[in-house]
Amino acid sequence: MAEKGFFERVYETAKLIPYGRVTSYGAIANYLGATGSARMVGWALNGSNKADVPAQRVVNRNGLLTGKHHFQGTNLMQQLLESEGIEVVDNKIQNFEKHFWDPMKEL
Image 1 (cartoon, helix red, strand yellow):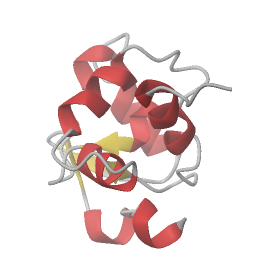
Image 2: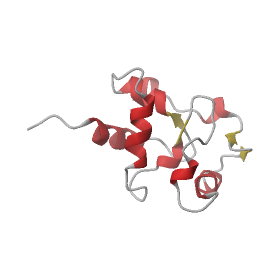
Image 3: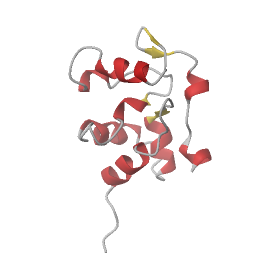
């Protein structure tokens, strides 16, 4: 059987992010052994079926919702996060460290 592609491995990792937690593009890249490939993680998530992959839980390293323009509607990414109890102000997750999930430590 062929090895899974990078995008598929990104989707599998994103599906493991617990409800009410977030991670960064770079943290997923590091976990997959592709340090420096945060943008590739973003591209993968942009191409995902967001109904199956909780892409709203992946933000930049500073907690900014840099991928929000890839969600339908102006504030859908923020609304999805807020529905999980994550406060967002000016496109930035509040108490980012509290909500941050690092797959290198958690998996």
